[in-house]
Length: 105
Image 1: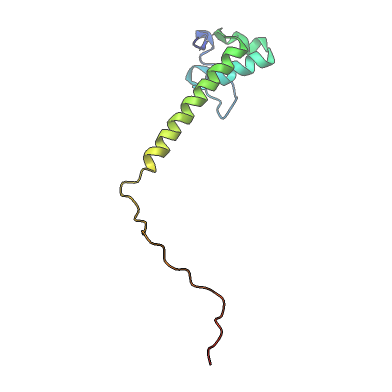
Image 2 (image 1 turned 135 degrees about the vertical axis):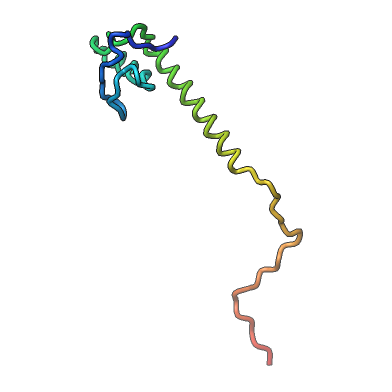
């Protein structure tokens, strides 16, 4: 279900999150919808033309977060791909002892 604001509230400014933009310009209406459902504030609920149940909103948020995590992981994988294999010596170098060797007379 899509979350949408009633047209008459598109220019209303509501400060939440990190912005005070008008509701019609916001891309984080899911957060406001969750706030509306959790608080039960009828004024905030009234901004929405349709508002899913809180459980549905939380599932939507979880889905968005999972998509973001997958995208970020894909970007990291692309950035960390090794184009040339790293050379590993076939025989290890001997480790020198740090103990002092006794002097031979």
